[in-house]
Length: 343
Ligand code: G3P
Ligand code: MG
Image (cartoon, rainbow, N blue to C red; front, side, top):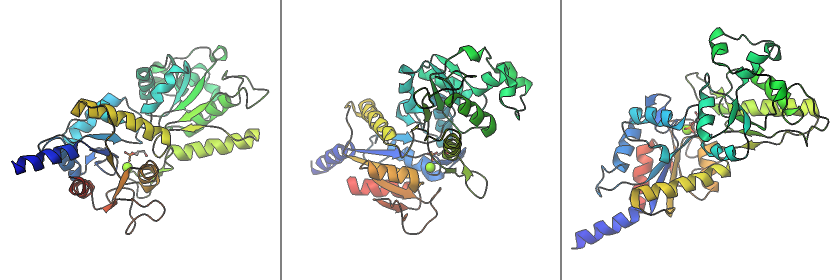
């Protein structure tokens, strides 16, 4: 019948559609649910007129926890399943680096959680700043090292270890200690603490950052400095100390590598949901931060929707990085507008 034909057409169109969600400021605020976030996921997970699942992935600059721990936490808050196969944190694409570097310094995050993340990514020999402080406390003169931290540290004679690369995974909890150790390594001979390179460029080990956000909204009335601020500080120190620019690689939104990785994740999630491993023609990115979500999505040719539940507090659209599909009160308004257009 005609009704069935219309339905079949809509199902076909729905299979050519996918959503990419930013998390903080779109679906949740920290651990607090944004109610329209749950409403949207209920709908995309099948509670809609077509009764089908519409593919969506999560692309966050958040970091500091293993993917499974974070998706379990999000599933509870959003009261909808969030699978690790549809989930990208800032450091998730950095798992590919495990193939190239064996001994790495992993920086940032709470306690020793980023060691766990790096282990899951397959890095063989993981060192965190606390391991180095536990070996030689004089390396960080202002550090107060607790007994608890010492108990979980893994000190060894680091004057005999070559560190292959530095991976900043998450926000530093102690800028003074982390910056000192990173600088020591960047000016060392091939990543060996206690040495000073004759040639600061050819003997310098590479450094990677999981994301570049300068500011991050928190409970504080004004956004707080984030990993981008830490990196800019390090770059300035390095330049002042050596006279040369620090070459570095940054992941996360709005970096291209992260969007390419997102495409792979969308394609394989399409396979899980619809049995076809391909990238749908119509992709909608929903974000609250023009400087990461929107600029990145625009550059990558996605449809972009800016919501008013997070970082963006401006007028009609962002002036520097306007969302190409529009600005919406919340994620529900954005997703339903996209569905009306596509279906
Ligand atoms: O700035 C780090 C993080 O809080 C941003 O998360 O989900 O908005 O990319 P998200
Ligand atoms: Mg956000």
